[in-house]
Length: 289
Image (tube, rainbow, N blue to C red; front, top):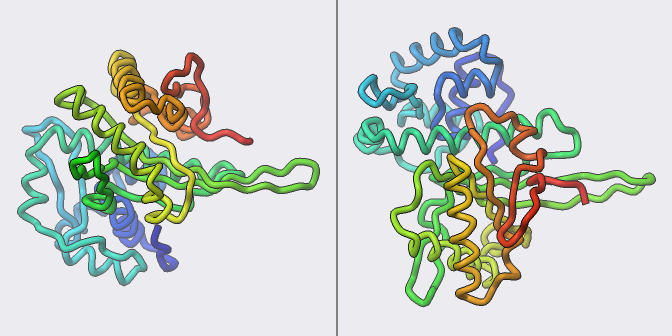
């Protein structure tokens, strides 16, 4: 994650947040930076930033979803001056097209909810530090594996946590790294999802993950929209692992069906709502050793 310079003004905080998270609604910005009671203030600032051509708004009444905001090219330059590096060159026409795609908007909002929960968790729980946050843009076309055909794995996000435990005056620290997969709809075909599971196993076993992110810690956290979808994705994962004779890797894969919009950071990461492939019990995603 980038480390912004010290900022004080509301519009600066919003630009930095958009630089870090890529896409945010007004409600998400209020939750991240202030509180939901401040949403009117956030909307006013966003209106001013849009008028100054620093942010773009995606969506419309036609898609029946909240507006999603992202930085314009000018906004990225301004965010860079505040210490947040722009990830890539912006194509305004492509961003505008995304605003007419309700599936993209719904999925993006849900993924961002998870990232916000991780950030807020690290701000309120002393023994948890969020040391790295990777957005979908940062992971795009970055991970390729041979299955034997060449396949690109594109996680929805990546999160790395540093956990600290003190026991009898002895302090231990360790890292947990998660690739996040959010499913609001089932994948187009079972074989495609199973191919992704094969890809993740190959990616982890080959050492590519450690080479890319400088850690051997790796888990895959799958968040489904419904319990039925969670059950289906867990079953497909187990079938995929059995097909390649790697059921031992089942403990890499976690599944839940939380509502990302309403789940608290503690519920999402610290409550025992996650099942593992081949498992029959539930566990928190982050636990003290």
